[in-house]
Length: 310
Image (tube, rainbow, N blue to C red; front, side, top):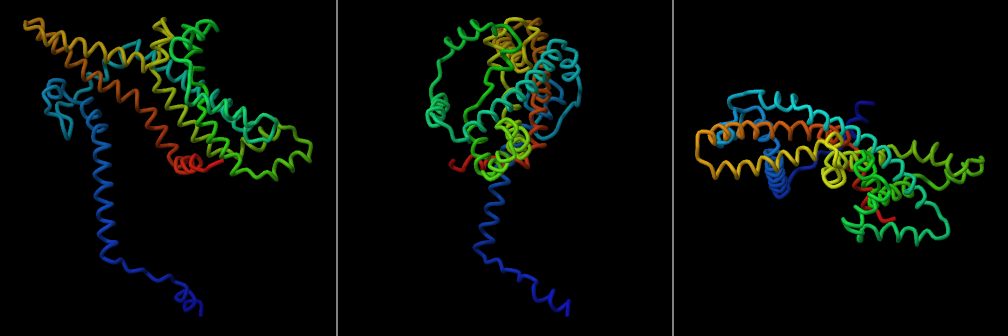
């Protein structure tokens, strides 16, 4: 009897018509092409970082590494300025992300509550998404508050994204029922206690998504160090990398205008520097890629949260 019941509730397999099969094949081919176009540049950078400099420069490295060598990585890890800037970026990213999460979740929780002047405050938040003071007023403000040429400027600059605040507010209003607040209020909980003990523990998904957004933005930020820092020991990795790329381009233009034995030797050094550039790109992007892979399961829900009006 049990076997018959199981047989009866077994869902029927739907037949795939020719139009559906053709559509699925077309979608599969398009997705594969997009995947290849997206991944090949990343793959090319990785194999070039392990290949011989002359072969890379002559365009012979396309599908697999040739003349495998670790000279580029040795040059990168022997550069003390790069190593120091790498740890600077780690410090700025971790500290800045934590501060950004605290401020963003606090602002989102405030905007999710009902209070006099909420519409005006929401308008002022949204206004900053479309208008800002510009580079010169911002520079003067940073200088006047004493953050110029200080490590804190890389941590606090861009501390809050209004878009992320709106996404977090939408998550709180759509996911955490108002009945929880009423129950906590009846038990004598204050706004801060409700925020810390109920809202934060129930907001793990949005906190993970915002951690990726803020973390990647902080890690890739080179502009703040370029404009607001003078002391080289405070520069983040991306600013140092930007300087290296700019110097390589200027050196290439100079060498192309020279024809001599010395220029040939310099060209060889430039080829090695090009390999080091690929290695630097791999080292600098690896943490962001790992962070994305670890948090990818939260992305779909994070995108859906942002698409809900609230």
